[in-house]
Length: 264
Image 1 (spheres, rainbow, N blue to C red):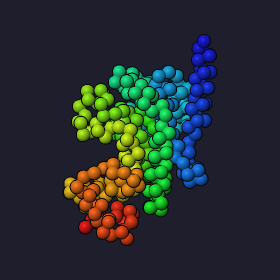
Image 2 (cartoon, rainbow, N blue to C red):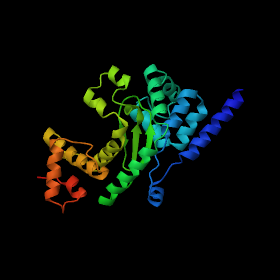
Image 3 (spheres, rainbow, N blue to C red):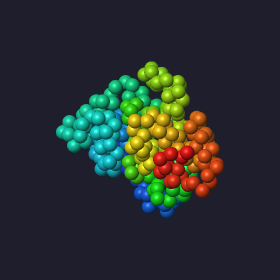
Image 4 (cartoon, rainbow, N blue to C red):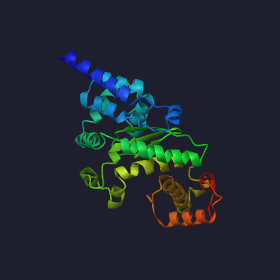
């Protein structure tokens, strides 16, 4: 019976590896499509089965993602620590994290809509900023920490932060109504775009001690996100100021806008 379970487990992992094969930026350019890597499913498989083979598959197929999750997001220690497998497994035995995993498994069984929206939005973005590459994008289950993890050419989405404005756990842990309004499926794509842009166009050094300059820079990024998504996802007075400026200066491109110290 144990041998049969192990064989079934390997078969499941093989299917996952085939269905969500890692897509390089070159492949994305050829197909024109973004296919989000379902790292969360391999994570879920290990954390619910406890089988070491599942964790080995995570480390083999997704070494960067596994290291980032364990070391940077969950802060459990180094991925090569002798007892890290046990620590990782025990950490997720918490009832709240078990509920989050189940919520992700139910709400994000199908993410075709995200693949399509990410493809359209990042295609428009890179067309308007030619030097910007379309990133690799994957999903994970965290512990209500960061919503989006960003590298130079990689974006990780923590699906546990997008389970809905009325999700009971968010209310239990004191998230405000304003925060919960943005913890929905609708904000996954705009958050990916915004944080990826912020990685490549960080807040200017001179804005470190100025909340006004930081808010202004973020308004520029949110304006660009609205434009490439062709929706008014983000809206406030600063974004409307940027929009007014861009209407009056049609010669200014996104790269110039985001690189400038001040749009006024």
